[in-house]
Length: 524
Image 1 (cartoon, rainbow, N blue to C red):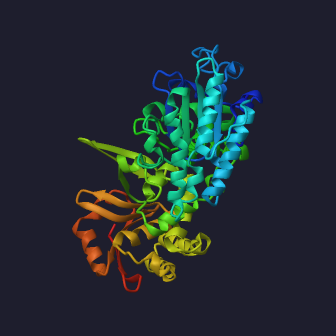
Image 2 (image 1 turned 90 degrees about the horizontal axis):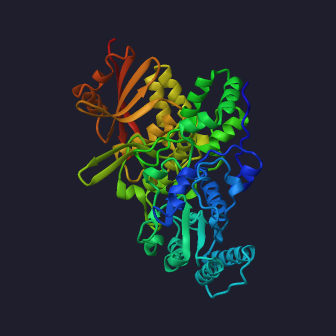
Image 3 (image 1 turned 90 degrees about the vertical axis):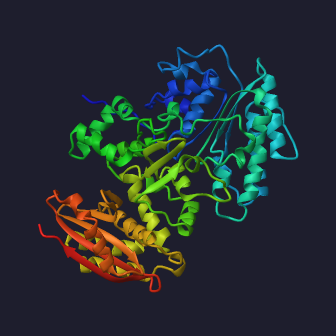
């Protein structure tokens, strides 16, 4: 008989999770690697939203406060020295989203004052949040037998993220930089420091004064600290997997396979195992349906703004390690932000000499389903709901093997795209828009497909058909067809037993739409 595990999708406090009997996937062996002091004392990790960062911070808080009863049976219990306790200052910056820097300062003053009262520290004051922060750390350290305290900062970057691509971003950055610089100044008074958030900013930015922090964002020891491995899901949730299987007419094995398809795929180090989104999985278990739970939180506005101004080819995303790891708030990079916010993940890693380079991809069906619909709106300047009809018409035409109707749907789609969305045109821009439109409705389309003699712009792989598509800008469609034939792109699919159709599409920079197309079906 299968017993349904007690799951929580809206509880991020470790003590409540344990006291109320909810299932806790034990990550304390990884936390011990940081908290023990053997590898250092001050750490930073960036992870996407909804991956359990707040729960990890809460777990560390309970650990340093010496609440042993909450850790009964967990991996860290026999390793930890429970005779020692430290004052813990937990700053949750997630609620401090202000419209202006003065408003933010006021929120920060109030937050620090609240924490001081909770920790039994006499009212601390100062002319700036940084001064109050410094005096609070000093007061807490003075209360500890060894003269040190513990500092935990959750969602450190939230006050700034809402101001990316805005004129006041530098002002917010400087305010946070001054505040967080206190951490380095009072390093000797901190037994342990852990900072987490979504983004990792460049070292010349907020963290310029925090070169003592150990950045374990892309570290093999913490690759699976956030999110669930396959083994963990099978170990901790067998009853939930069985209930999900029964609700959907599947075997347990098939149910787990669908979990992998929908919610797995995140990699935070090229040598680490892939992990499953814990919140999406919990919501899936709770509702008993495989669905898109990621979209319940809309794509951040700053990401939409960046994609509008800097179109990105999602069919093939390559980036150097230095660019992947961080960015400057005043000049954010789309690929870096998409990786850090969980919309892209590591697919491949290549090292040549000292050069380290990553290929990224969309992690799973859930993210792809929600993200690409948002991207359609970002790239076309139109609401996704208004473009879905054109997208479905284009997809339906391909399934019906009606190339003229496919082209007609694309022409209709491109007709109303605003001027400023196509003012920096190249073949890749048009290719990306078509790719995103088709992928947004679930069509199996691949871009930049490698062959023995080049790269195919786009391949649409359907149950009965394969379409090999080449795009040209201000050049004839015949040139596209000749390229497909000359490089024998179809040879890659000769054994597929599917109908193969070659499609050449020519765009006009002046007219901003398709002006010519040719297609040719190869003999079976």
